[in-house]
Image: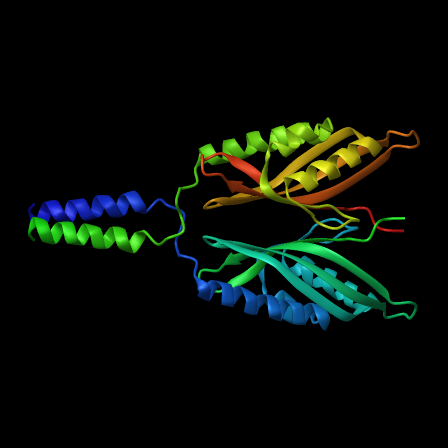
Length: 158
Length: 158
């Protein structure tokens, strides 16, 4: 095989692999990065820190809260989060991880949670438990952010 | 470059690419396969056909319905679905796709829906709209199945 032939073969192999949608391999580093991100998200949720929260999500993030329409994009999520923070304070928040799956530049977490929510205007605290799926998206700089988040309550409706 | 050197180079390149978590490339064929699957899922839901539904999900599927705990695994989902079918009949079901993203052997759909649910025991029908995220998993034979499903209502709680 000549150098030219070898070069052609190498280019051919690279071209065969290039279209695969797998810019980066997932690794234990990704698991740690996503777990660290989620810890920051949990802290931001638990403390009602909207600015910290919106700094951890993608520009096009979609929040899918129960009892309301989807909230699309960082600015809408900021407004939604500020409105919620005015009405409620989270006085206990305990998320429990069920699984984390990384697939290329996306990942998802399935989890359960319990929380206590206290109305800022006074009145009884609400204790509830529920479950969520969060989708994370790898950014061009390699970091991960929250891209989609949907949750619901485990409590039967009356 | 000798043939031996060229062979070594090719093997080295293959080894560099091999660890990437991208056994198969996603394609328009995947989009069609997942859309076809979802159409069958929608039909099964709309007609309350439990056996058809559980044939479209993975063994380890997790259903995350509002107002109840997660339902884990095909057998538990069968029982849950049969119990629901005894209590309610879906008399209208209109899902609307928002996005479908394929990432390696996983994919997710975000969608909104409206439905009318009629109690089998009689009484008023319930009209509602909501949103869901479904995660699909590519099977070893290349087909896709529903692996996770979480939804909630858009209707404000009283």
